[in-house]
Length: 254
Image (cartoon, rainbow, N blue to C red; front, side, top):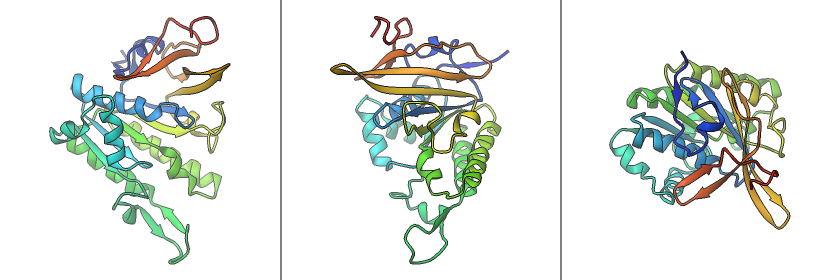
């Protein structure tokens, strides 16, 4: 029997058959400002603070200070959880982290941009962090800067496959991978393969409707589980994301 994981996001579990399936890997897709990082932080924080499920957050785009600042806006004290060894934060940002020197090998010294990312180093860091806290929840935020540096499509796809394979092999850990959409369609990812190598795909939209913007969530794929095929409205409140499963976008519900 499949075990379900409570997301910690009010209303979301109702549109994915009662929760995410434990041990699987899911992708959160959306444009800038769609709420991807908030979704991921809420998943991690609630799991550790309320459900007793320790977690690892890997930041590849923002500094740790920025991530913690975002979390504090919703009352989520990541520093306290880290001190209590309920979460680990892996700072893998090539712009902010000291770890960048070990993960990026300079191919041509002195030539700007001639750097090659060592995926195995990142995977090792993730495994070590998961081992330290016995993690049951993992967040990779975001996949986009990691794969942008690859010039060859085949190489980028192989690296994505390697990452998702590793996450699936971490026993009992449910993972979220955050990635950018280049336009409001699931096919408009950077390499076109991202949605096909994970167990589920969740899209977050920040759409214009007449004189206002509407936030909506769509479950594009949920392997082995029933899910809603509708776009549902959601809000970002002072406590985080709230999904409205009984309402539909553009059908009088939003």
